[in-house]
Amino acid sequence: MSPVGEGGLFLIQFLAGLVIFVLILRFFMRATHVDWRHPIVNFVAKVTNPLCAPLNLVLPKPGRWDWSALLTAMIVQALFVVLLGFLTDRSFSIGLIAISSVTEILNQMLDMMFWLIIIQVVLSWVSQGYNPNTAIFYQLAEPILRPFQKVIPPIGGLDLSPIVAIIAIKLTQIIVVGSIAQLGQSLL
Image 1 (tube, one colour):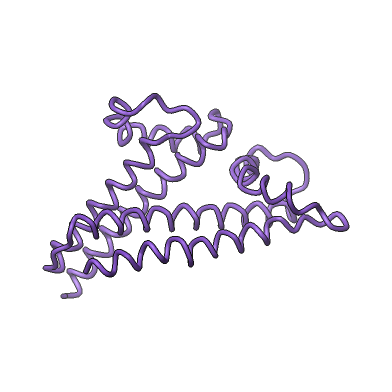
Image 2 (spheres, one colour; image 1 turned 90 degrees about the vertical axis):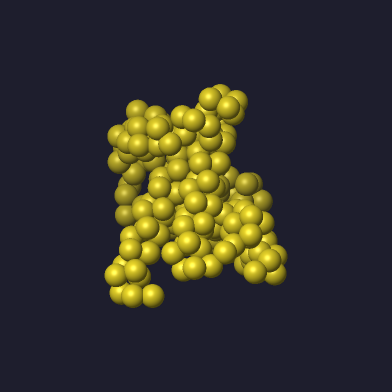
């Protein structure tokens, strides 16, 4: 592939990844009940509303789980895989496109959970007290950490649940998502 073609492919991959990131962020924001008056949340909602609107007509009204955001992210990923096949003169089966879309969305969701935990931990070290600009990270990370905090109590005032949560997230990526991806590789 020529450098111009590689540059175009990079740009398409970047834009698709950005759209998928914002859609997954919307899904997490709805699932964790963040404050919708926050400027970042408001921005994400306004940017993603046009993308999710067609599926919102078909799917049940979004409650805690914004399935239209997740399904839209999968459709964008599937379109990217089809476009990638077209640009590289390869043909992918529908099964491979579906598995690739599912694994990529799962990986991005798990990566987002990982980074939300990391950001929340770092903010807990540097930001004391309530700060409306950083509160969104606590609101997003707290539901992820809560199940781990129920099992692992603080030891000497130190919360070790983020470490266990990160290990669980990474093991899920390696074992579960990796197994699904391996299934997809068999379809090549």
